[in-house]
Picture (cartoon, rainbow, N blue to C red):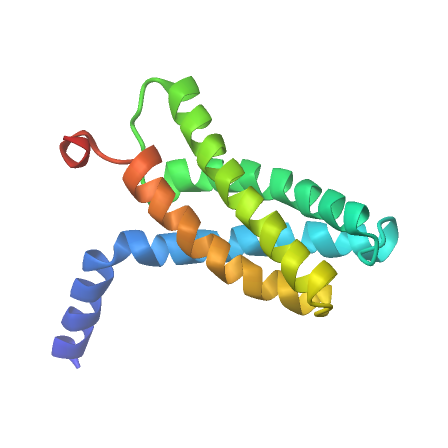
Length: 147
């Protein structure tokens, strides 16, 4: 039993960043999805392509704010002193994945006629992976990784 606990502890330490990112990414997805669903169930019509994108952007704004704070503090443990530069890099990378999100939602829902709630889940999987890559290698990279 002690050996098993030691193996688990070693794996958790080795993959701490990825595990933390998956937890934070999951929570960010909850924030995004909850905001999106709140919008489309209360005041926006997802069958209208413009309103679909408005709901998507509103959910994105809430998710990015949550994600920046939690990724900076808990996942990548950033010590970057240039807060504005880091924030700009983070938001810029998220704008890129927002555009991908919007394009995929348009293609899948507006062109492909898939249910918007199911499409949103599928698109979020793609977005989570891309966000990790951008955050790790472009936004929160350590100085030794950047050289």
